View (cartoon, rainbow, N blue to C red):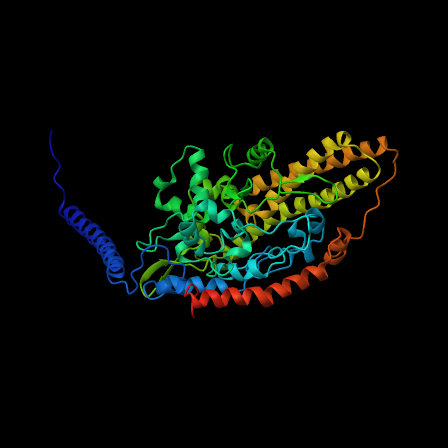
Length: 494
């Protein structure tokens, strides 16, 4: 075999090309080594060496100033998109039908869109849903309600035991749980590695035969969010926080789980339906969408990387990706900001169309069911009606409570809401037959629920008394909590 000899220019070209490759690889290795050295320097020279659970977020400021500073920006309320933002909006004022849908439950009193993590303690404390309930049929809220609001929670769980923490009253820990969602919720205080600080997530995966302690770093960038941004319920008399994932993540899987357990959150005041109240199944729905299926984490879109002074770090100003499209969507997509934003809005608008129809029909189903009971309907006659209303409202709430669901998995959300609309229509048809059996053949008169005030009056809420009780609570109990926390050094002095 005759070997061809390279021409002189070809040899030089190969040599120069090789040198360029070596040079580029050298730069990459150098940058990597510099980054490792920088990270090692931060951890080897930490000013605040922390062991155990440290709930006071400012303790991390000296060692991680960029992350801390961006975290403080979650206090901002200056971004609003077509559907949500970080400004607290009174949803019941905008959608009074929701007052009727939650009749008999605390959400009919007060429900606003969420603000940033810095407001977590403030918002749960100020909500009309917490404190001493005015409705005598409600018991005091359990301490489980605190679970996702503060890094003080894992501290208290460690001190008391998980069961003892859950099996208590919400007001019992007001002087203990005082620092808003922050560093120790997602990071090990000593190593700063991402970790799971709440047992419910670990337990849910264990029941599925999965060990999330073996999760990859990229998976952890979603799992730390999944500690709270999920569907959950308070199980048994001990109010043990539980994720209903044993049968799977879909709306039907969780419904089957609840049906098998005979669980309901409350009995609807009008229709007498045993209702399932969805929380915020963000993680589950995100896994059903194209981004989740391709391994995009929550943090990739809600905590994108940021560069400052040559240092790359994760932006802890957790917010809507639409507030920073250049660092979120455009990290992968090459379309303009306007095009990408409109793509999101288009998906949200289509889901919203179905939502509006479903809310209207579901409200009518509840009111017509009440009319049937008042007309003398029996439990046997109403059995199918209540089953359909329960199914319809579960699908409505599941699709609505996940604030970003119509983008995370638009096809799935539209499917869920459409099935909810179908069941609401079936429920109305079924109740009309019950009404005929009880001698009524006309149209059920509908009340005026055009405003939040009118809707709350219709379901029998005394909102003046509710607000007075809350104001008294905020002016007496809360200051005592804060004074006690500051005296014990549990609360930031800043």
